[in-house]
Length: 236
Image 1: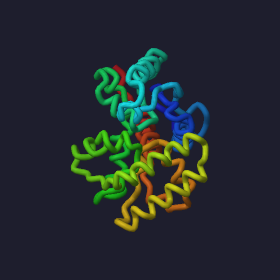
Image 2 (image 1 turned 180 degrees about the vertical axis):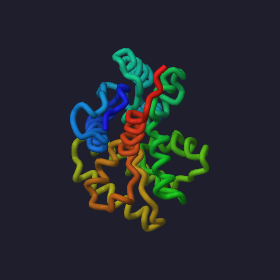
Image 3 (image 1 turned 90 degrees about the horizontal axis):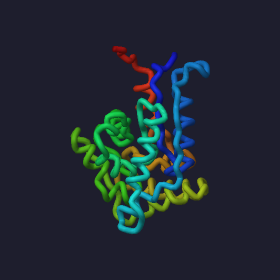
Image 4 (image 1 turned 30 degrees about the horizontal axis):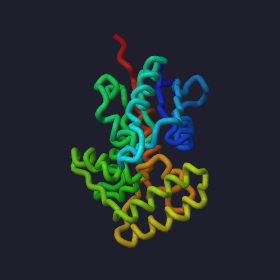
C-alpha cells in the first residue's frame, strides 16, 4: 500500500535512542511491501535541546526556542505533518502558535486513545517527573473522562531515574529497576502501564513482562502518524 505522499517531519534527539526506536516502529508498522510504498520522513534529531524536566523544576534553560526552531525548520524543509518523540516537550508545545499545532500529531492524544482502547477503566501513568507534575496527561485525559492512576512521588522519582539510565545506554539495568517498580504498582492494582516517556518503552521491552500490559507512547505515536500518512488526501 502506497502512502498518500505527505511528508512527516520528526523532531527527535530527546533522546536519540527513542528517536531511533520511533523510526524503527514507523518502518515496521507501515503497510508497505517495498521501499516506494513507505512514507517520506525527515528526522531532525537535535540532542542539544535543553532538558525539559530540568527547566520545569527551575534548574535549566528553557527548551521552547529550540523546540520552536526545530519544528519550523522541519516545515521549511518540506514537512506536511509534524511529530515530536518526547512527551515532556508537549508541555511546551501545547502553548506554541496555532499554525504549528495544526500540523502536529500529538503523542499524548495518541497515547490516551490507545489507553481507552486497551483499558477503559484506567491505567498507571509512568513518565518523567516533569510530565507527571505538569499534569500534561491528566489534563488531556480529563477532556474525554479518562482517568490515570499516578504512582506516589517517591515512585515517580524512581521512574524518572529509569529514563535517565536508558539515556545512558544501560538498558538491562533500566529494565530491572522498571520491572521492580511495575510489580509494586501491580500489587496495588493490576492495570496496564502507560510508558509515557519515550525511553520507557525501551526499558519495558527488556523487562520480560507481558507486552499487552504496556501502552507505549512511541508505539501510539507511530500508529497515529501512519494513520495520517496512509489516509486519502483530498486534492483541491
